[in-house]
Length: 284
Ligand SMILES: [Zn+2]
Image (cartoon, rainbow, N blue to C red; front, side, top):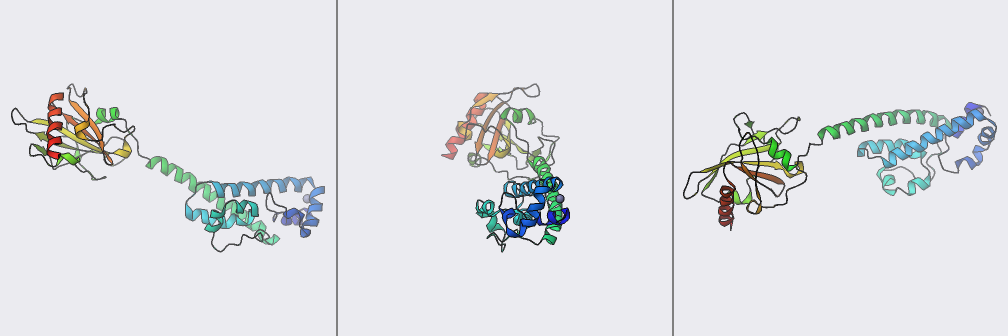
């Protein structure tokens, strides 16, 4: 038997199987024992096949692509490998897995390996693209300090909120006569990606006596904030003074449902606490 014929036979041997012991492999086996070049080529092909099976069974690839890959590689996998991945076998509808798979004719196996190489190359390119896409689409997360630093006091240069996420008022903010929240929400871009990351609205609270207390309510999806604030309601949120644009506004930060809110008051902690008290009463 010459090298080419031997290799065509050996192409049908699935990695980590006993296909080589089959009677029809006797001639190829005999050639392999005596030919260093074929031993090297055979080892290379086997490790390629093993790598393919490993990639297809383990790597997280899109479902449709996985099906294509599996169809192409199923014939390479040994029955024991398939048995340890029943979900994968099930995914390839109609494919025989009783061990008769893999005994392709020698003529077909060579072109099968070649087309498999192309499929694998395409899959790798696709996974690479998916990885890049995933990195780019993974939105940046902000700490509370980041958020407070980036929220502007002056909203005059902001654009109308693009409604990239749902902006709902906090639960207790709707029922108070003394609290007026601007109907016009403005959008804030916190990262370099397109689209607004936070929505802000101006509010004004009118105490029974004294001048109105003005402030800004900001909302950002909770998925964009890490770590999340401890407070889960406005009335329980601690107030803190921050430095901003040469002023010292006071803020409260809390999470409600899937939104993190920042209430910023251009006044004192006592002003903010007065609003918190009023809203806790009106909500009760
Ligand atoms: Zn040879």
